[in-house]
Length: 170
Image (cartoon, rainbow, N blue to C red; front, side, top):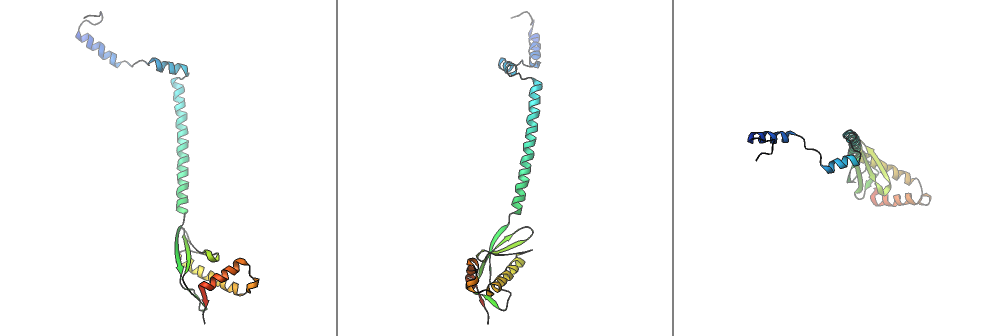
């Protein structure tokens, strides 16, 4: 079996090894794709650089969004329910526990009494609740200065609510 170029088995082995080292030519489909779409290696490389740049911009934007979301999550308060069972006054006492809401932020605490549209702040829960107690006493004193007929709808409701929560001593 001699095809003219290979004279013995060692020549066949050498020819096979040389053929393996040669790059395979592009297929007809690959060649047609490159020619038909006017794609050249430099152009494809340039497009890849452009995609890489776009990808870096997208990654930066996502990082910025994640940073912003983390800040929002860290700024979101913890919300808990609590009660006020006494007031810092010799003139008034609670009839029943007064339900309040505490919003605990990183820097401060806000105590809310939605029924009376009152709130107070403090550096901690204790301070915020005590400040809210003082706001309740101030509201009682303010409402006592007016007759029922002189009050608007909301203040009348506050006065009615306060009568269910707080009473005068002595």
